Image (cartoon, rainbow, N blue to C red):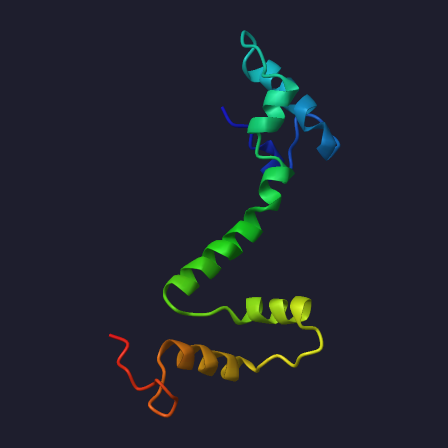
Amino acid sequence: MLDLSSFTGRHASPPQHPDDAYARYVDEHAVHHQAGMPMSQSMFERYSLGSDWLAGLKDAAKKVVQTCRLMVGVHDYEYYLQHMREKHPDAQPMSREDFYRYCLEARYPSADRPGGGKCPC
């Protein structure tokens, strides 16, 4: 059974240092699975949901959202600002409105521009 004592504030033993996750796992395994053998520390680190695994989750979610937006034609203004800061620090970035107008014009050219006026369909 899953130990939820950490959520209720009642701990069977005092909380330990977070780096001692493997020791906590071995202790909990001994209590709940007396006959079984706990996994090795290398296996525990490989399969546990430790902080290393969760550290990149936020970045991965941002990239998924950015990819989905680009797939439907919505450009990412924050990514544009980051690019301008890193690659063109001297240049003045466009405002959010100008950026979206530029992206819309690039996707659907108007009749005023040379080669424009064509239906995107």
